[in-house]
Image 1 (cartoon, helix red, strand yellow):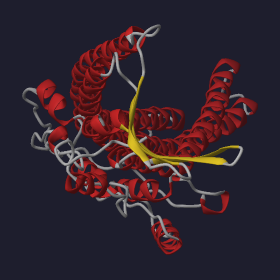
Image 2 (cartoon, rainbow, N blue to C red):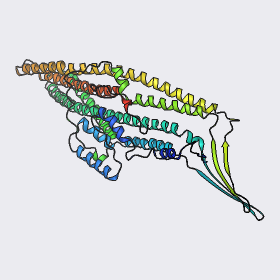
Image 3 (cartoon, helix red, strand yellow):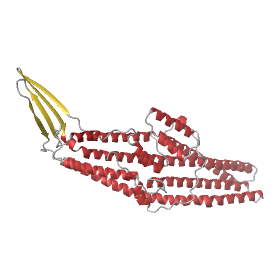
Length: 464
């Protein structure tokens, strides 16, 4: 189809501009994605596309694995090596290709016909172009540009989600390993107590009830140690999966204990409004609704006439003058008035609008829950650090003094060691829960807890 372009209809210069206003970018828009995710991550997410860049990424991962991993290091490895995240990056290329394609003029068509009747030969030629596609090209390009921007926001949000999952797995793995070490102390103390109780029972200095109690303690400690080791293995494997590591790379070293608690607990004002301004999933949902609104307007505008073609004709016959002219092809809305197409667009638009409202309400609820969890987890972890553990240490010191003064038995000393280890394990769990609550709070807010408000939808879509 050919739009019979006269200068007053559509200047050739405009066609050239339309045909060349969009092109594929070298990074498929990943630079904007990295800029969106950087304030929340604290580091620039990388993307390796060439063989050289992929080799450099693998080398970087190996270097990071040689040292005890910090939480920033595991996030960096996940961003470099998580295969699922790398697959999500390809959505950018798909969205950009659609946007660039929407900016391209539709290809013209050429037809050639040759018929003969006896000695008479008739040759028909036509050059045609779709009109509707050309007329709706600017609006279609804006819709695809908006979808490209939605894809960028979704990809940046996916990066933050993978980073949050990796941090959670890191805290769980470190805490689980720390719990195993303390549980080993409990089991060792219980084994010593059980062995000593058995010897004393044989000497007649211990009754069967006291012996059974010590043996039960040991049996329970063995069970708890086995369960702790199982949890530690599961937590480490979860971390390995998120890091995208193979079996040969799974021997990395984690720190002996979780990070210290922050000195002060930040107080958030207007946290719900902060989340509405920062969260990338909400920004993406808003843009998607806007794009669907434009799509609905396009379908309404082309409801009755969806196919309009103009063709330039040039026919010739031997011995006759040439015939030139044009042909108009128009879809007659006789059976399909486009009502179903418009109704479908309206339903899709309303569906997206309802999803947006649901996302916003869920986000506000998540912020309230995560903020409450953050506050309580900080209070509990600090209580264990400042109250429970010092008191347990003081009790242990008193038991030791009494044992040295022959005022208490070795079994009382062992029982206190078990209770102290249990308190330490509870403190480890409280610290782990705080860091996971801190991570959940960052994800709910769409950025670090102390980050100044920044609109996630401030970036303009490319090509707009």
